[in-house]
Each structure stands twice: as structure tokens, then as C-alpha cells.
Length: 85
Image (cartoon, rainbow, N blue to C red; front, side, top):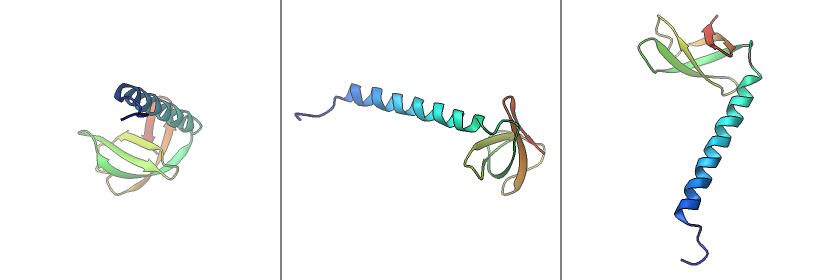
């Protein structure tokens, strides 16, 4: 159809937008380095790894020997990772 953007251009644009979104999310999360956040844990992603979201919608993943799914816990965020407080 005339005036349509080619499939290859669409794919490149999507790839570019995804990369920009990931970069902006990382920059946003950096401002919380060293801060303690409350996190609602929603899923287990590994044998002792759990994922949840902070009140600021930051995706947080921690290692824990106890099941934390469904719990709101305090987590200290730093560049090397996140740790339960």
C-alpha cells in the first residue's frame, strides 16, 4: 500500500524505542541508589529469587531464603543489587 512504512523500518524503530525505554528506566532507578523502598513482592523468579515493584514502580529483585510473595518489605537499593532490610 502506498505511503506505508516498510517492515524493516518499523522493526528498527521498535528496537530503538525499546532501547530508549530501558535506558530511561535505568536512569530513573539510579536516583534511588542508597534509598530504602517498600516493595510488594509478586513472583518467584528463581530458587531463592523474588521480584516485585516499589511504590515508585521500580522493578526490584532480591535473593531471600524465605518466601516473600505477597509481602510488603523494605529493600535497600544500591548499584550492586537490592537487599532486604
